[in-house]
Amino acid sequence: MPRIQPSSSEASRRMAKVRQKGTGPEIALRQELYRRGLRYRVDFQVLKKPRRVADIAFPGLKIAIFVDGCFWHGCPEHATWPKQNAEFWLQKIEANRHRDADTNERLRSMGWTVLRFWEHELAPKAADAIANWVIRTRSTHRESLPSSNQTK
Image (cartoon, rainbow, N blue to C red; front, side, top):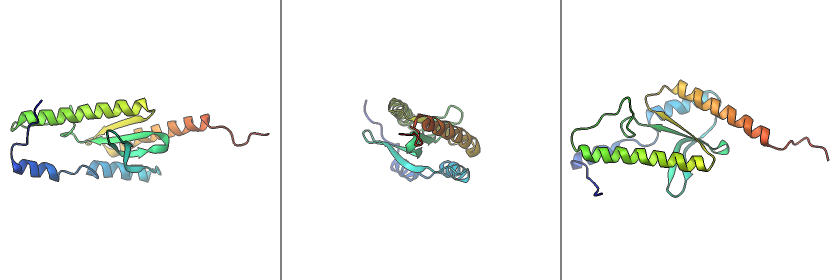
């Protein structure tokens, strides 16, 4: 399939200026997690080939968190479909969705828990879900560790 180009050089410049890391919703979520005493890694590379980076990760627990933008990932509630150069945007957003599904599948096959949140979701609610996973995963990890108090 031939690659469709942005409608103008101005549109291309606007797209290049859009933040990919450290967006407002990501920062709000990170602050909420930190406030709860959870420590995490930011922009953590979870796959090398193809290269994929989680917005937030708990590497030791194998939990990867992604905060997806409503426009860029085609949110069912808030996505808008531009009329100008519609075919380009359809391909772009569908490619993002395909990449997200591929990332989820690859990480899950490697034993990771993948949590995705839309940018419009409230940080406290997302932090609740993440904290629950962290607590659940930590307790599972502790149960599977050999006891250090074993007698010889």
